[in-house]
Image (cartoon, helix red, strand yellow):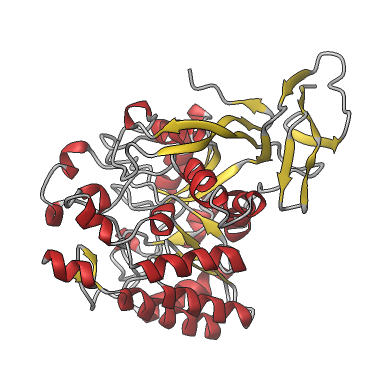
Length: 428
């Protein structure tokens, strides 16, 4: 019997409503007891967590691991190492690989590779449509049986209302949510940044917030008709948030996530950074009023999760003019620190709420094990320190890619260790 005691830390576990200095006794990969003054017993290992936060393992529900097909940007190994370095014990990976994860063999290959390394759990998300072409439904049942936990065409929106309707109906049979990249391609199809004052000043084609709002509104109407579970990925506008808030008030199966970059940056950053391609992402950085609305959504409970939308790209791909660069930034290794320093320390959200957004909320939205450390639960644990200061230095990233807009930011707070089923994850 393997026994581990995490002793003397502050346990923050929104899944149980716990925020107290408590020990955790782990046996054979699951939580055995939580309480004060626990002992490891003969042969048990003790981890001293005095001064540290002990949380249910953090879960990033929106990452791009790029494997198969684009291993020069990221691999499952490097991506899960980045996850562990950032304090995450689990990630959900989007299907826009090459080939897309639209079938059982691709799902099985992803899980096989993930199981070889063990730096973090990997939960594959399968494609809604074959080849992510938006034409016909993928083999959802086969993928779910192989291990996918949700379906999405992320990277592309589902433009066909009939296909989305079918996906919402079909996914219910397998108990998985439908995740939408909410963007109406009929608006701002050539946009490279948010349509507004700064796109006009800079002379760049804009992508209007209405493109997101229209898709969210359409899908909520479909959700009303079909039931099921629907999740808005990387929500970025005040109007979309209000649509989600109103839908939740009617008890629809509706959840959403926001990203650190949409919470902390605005479209003005494109100008202030002198057109840095590290400020180019989709959805684009929005207006200040949108940013403030998203923070309010954290505070009032409308937002279910913070997700990084970790989108690695090779340096050469980003080292081009702004309009030609691919969308996306990395985020696994900065998300926790950004939350601790720019949200908690700024008194925008509590530490308890941040843990909920990074652990309990994602687990609930995906319907996966985790996000709680009650007796009997799997012992995936994240330890972090709220005090140390560290500068964001991409040279230290475990990820293969370095595309971040947070280069040089000095952040207070960092992950200390992660444990999977009670075993410490070692990166050295």
